[in-house]
Image (cartoon, rainbow, N blue to C red; front, side, top):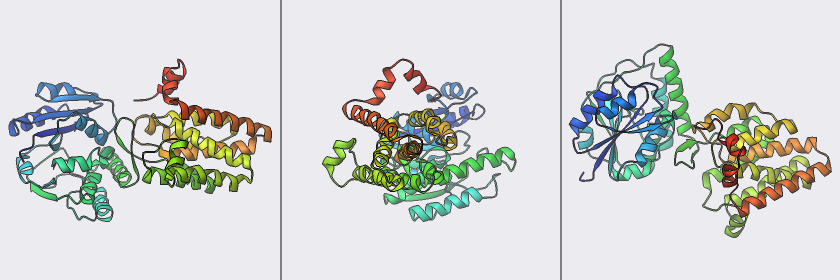
Length: 402
């Protein structure tokens, strides 16, 4: 309890309530810093928070979890108190209660929907984290330094609270719930409220699935498995091999590092993906093409949207489907999800399988040579750095990125 306390508030379009919330927090916790993550607000939320005495981090719109993860990195070491921007009430008892993760349960329910999202969230926490909770979605949470280390970066969007509880339970930390007389601007049973709760439910479900951390340190759902789910059995097999690397990979990067390390998930990819290509095409050229193309898209998947743009540029040349890539691109660009190896490997494999159908034998070997050269270049230097310093290509690469 002697560790310093920092208060984190994620806010979007909360001009009407943020100043009052910040003022209450500063009055209740005079020695704590109040950090507000402005998640792309279109009103005066950031200005109002600053005028009330908060330190504001202005961000492009990404989602609640991404905003909290970004502002947490700006916070000094120690305990955290998370608070919604529209909260009314005293959170002092929450901080004083102790425990590693202490969650506020509202004493009285006002507004809200039919409890579907909350019920599913509660069951997912019990299933994945082995913990029974009353308030799975409450944003009012006090975290010890140990809980902070176990839970941050938090999951994306509105799934951050559910995954936070799961992570704390898996780390065998003490999780408490404390009933408090709090109030906030609850959603109603109208179209806007139903849309909000649908997004909340989507994020909750994603938060309990595969997760990855991107180059910016944001924790995002890995959705590349959708490419495998829509690309047929051959692409699904490639996607599953990539997913294994997403879930259990070590620090090794590149062909040489994986070969030196022996039995790694990267070695599984090096052998397994070409084997899928060989079984699917019954040609050595097909095996090489599938393996090299999967690796090429994987090498490009180091910044939001980069691998998907490369796929969309190449897909018309070989007759590969573009629908799934078009659907995933906005979420990838806005850092709301990640392809991961499951997605980038599957996209590369899909291009290669279509190439085998379109190209003659000579055409396939030309493509193999080009991809082998690209792979060698990636082993020797940074493809991403080359893209970012090349005029024209760097502009296309950054197009649409948040």
